[in-house]
Length: 207
Image (cartoon, rainbow, N blue to C red; front, side, top):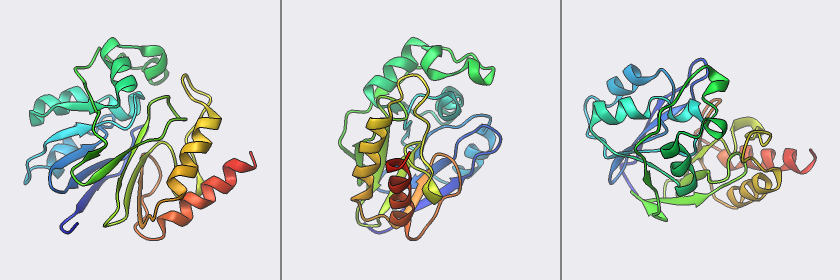
């Protein structure tokens, strides 16, 4: 694929990183928390097709409703994550952990296995239905909170988290040829992404 471009809105405070992806369709990866103004500015010159949420946690979804209305685009999430968001399941969305109350969201099920040239990969462990997005030509991975740069991984001690599932997900990602790693938190890296994933796998094996 040619012409793939990623604009980074690096998370501040409790917010996650949000990515504006320009591909065959333009889309947002995650929605963040208190980042609406920054995201709208970053998308002023392009048309956005949809928001894709990697998982249900409030720091990734808090701004989804406002962005959906501002940009006039739908919100998508993996089915089990979408169901939790539609039902306003605060226990697993973790709104109260951040002093937030997230009302039920209008979220559509992301059932595609590929979207805009990206493979939609099931990577549970941090939450039961978390996903990552991988573009094999440019070797780009959006990993949500499954794996971060410098060998870090997502927590598994929160509701619906599971260490063994996370280990399996990181193993799956370690088999990919990854140049650029765009995680939900910490700094993105734009070369040698697979080395960061391998370090995370090695770390998990010895925990």
